[in-house]
Image (cartoon, rainbow, N blue to C red; front, side):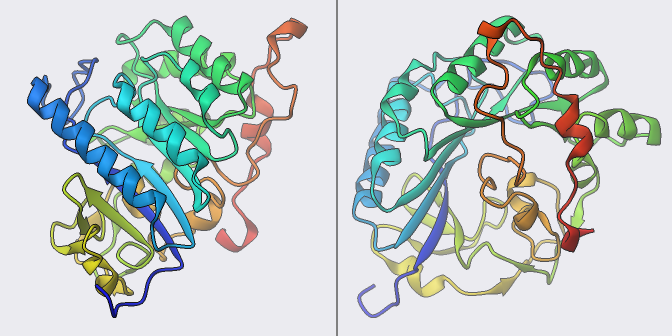
Length: 319
């Protein structure tokens, strides 16, 4: 609205109406759904409207994280939107969650310094070598990305194999499976792959805690409704009429617990904004980056990736 101050910096977690996925993971908490043509058109139009807003957003520094219910990169309009967003002068970073099932040659049209991908590997849903080939394509184009798995017992061997095949500079994360408890031995096995797994294993008390969401991080739905995050239903305004600006302010979290990475990473009671500095959206810890030639298959080298896992530590102020 006209008299409201505009934010200097804003991170938007965008989630349009898309809800279909090309994989059918039995552990996914979301019901499998196929979007009819009219729903896909509505999703495409909503995304186009958002990109239009971003092109003239009253924000000095904008970051966008696309967090779809389904798999978005199988849809042409998401690939085109990400490439477009990456070239907008006010956009610092544009990232997306993906299962990497779709082709990735489109990244050649994006700015590799601004585009980033959060890639989840689902064993049994995608051929492993195809998944790896696509990560190599991302690396050839200089695109930042992380790779992760859901930490189920049946996935541990696949995750270990994946770690052995990825260059050491690629961060491999593990998400605790929803509703699952881990024995000390199980937690240790996953922590050997992801030294930050402990943050995922235990839900974080958040009620009354200071959180960046609602201040300089917001969730935006396809119709422009702005909420402080995906996990707090109360709206704080609308993106397209500017009413959200009046709702941006520090506020405590109203939820008892926060157990999803894209939520608790913003809690000020945790050190994760510092841990992931420069890579919060794509889930890459600060300092965890490949050397220019690491993993170059033309050299014939096999890179196990264990050295960065062993040598990386939390920032000293976070211990």
